[in-house]
Image (cartoon, rainbow, N blue to C red; front, side, top):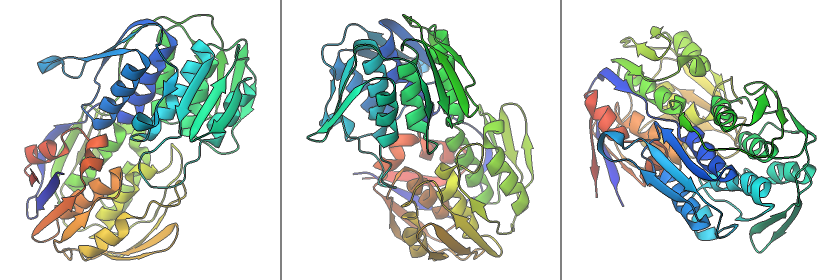
Amino acid sequence: MDKMLVTSGRVLNGTVAASGAKNAALPILFSTLLAEGEHTFDNVPLLKDIDSTAELLKSLGCESIRGEGPNQHTFKVNVSKLKTFEAHYDLVRKMRASILCLGPMLAKYGEATVSLPGGCAIGTRPIDLHLDAMKALGAEIELRDGYVFAKAKKLKGTTILFEKTTVGGTENLLMAAVLAEGKTIIENAAKEPEIVDLANYLIKMGAKITGHGTSVITVEGVDKLIPARHSIMPDRIEAGTLLIAGAITGGDVTVTKCQPHDLDALINKMKESGFKIDVTENSMRIHPLKRWKAVDITTAPHPLFATDLQAQFMALMTVAEGTSVISETVFENRFMHVTELMRLGADITPKTQVAVVRGKPGGLSAAPVMATDLRASASLVLAGLVAKGETLVSRIYHLDRGYENLEGKLISLGAQVKRVP
């Protein structure tokens, strides 16, 4: 199992491009189940989660083909009539997003059997809201033996109010509603850019959707969808991680092929901390700063501060001047990186969903640490960039689920980072 060896002392400088967004690509790949034929996608990142999705689609009877060489970010999915409607536990346990095959299969074929999902252990993340939404469209749902058994002769549109904002629930419902009979109104819908990207692809296939990107999405059901071509949006979480990497080393880093307007909450907090950031339509540049001040953040659904950037921002705050309070309101178990940061010398007092970080500029020291989830692994690599000595980060398979060649991108900026067996 690979580990990451991070040596401190390098100031990052240069330009680096963000890859395609994992959290946009996964639901879009599952949306191919709605239309038989060949779907073509550009800017698909090279990630373990994409491989897991392709494996699951293959088990259902679809063929996935990734381009080679300069075309390696082009991904085609050939969909024919499915040979099975079961998403097996052995595949679903690898990745929580697998539950997103439920809505498309139910809408297109009238049945789906999906294992209860796995993924990062950052909270309970129940799928009750997904299942309630399918029931509201007329599906019969039964939970048995660790599986969701769903059936419906024909889904029928209705008004559905999510009692809690849910990204996955909104995506699943959106994909189910496009082939449902009549109008579906989704209230308290999630507003994440990845949902907008999914809706844009569904519209290319022939779906009738309005309001995506707002809290109320309206879907007029259609009889049939056809495959199309689509370029996956840039990964805002990777772009934010790379920006923080430049910041934590006091470097001058420009992140290109990104959408800075998706990161307004992060950019505003970094400016509040003292950083100067130049923003264009598709790039962000952070200017060198030797000392920055601690600021408080509270995670919340988009457009507020993303929970997926909380761990990385905490790493930045461990070497800030002053004390910051970091509040996590999205997931109840997303401070598992705290004890690992403390192994590097960080001064953090964690409570259930609040952490007090007392900044220690220049005060971190290298140590062996262990990644506990995808974003925690990134935060440990970032902290390792400034922790005196060599930090060895184990269990970086978490990192490979959501970051394409992170070490290569950091090395291109001057970091001393390498994989070791």
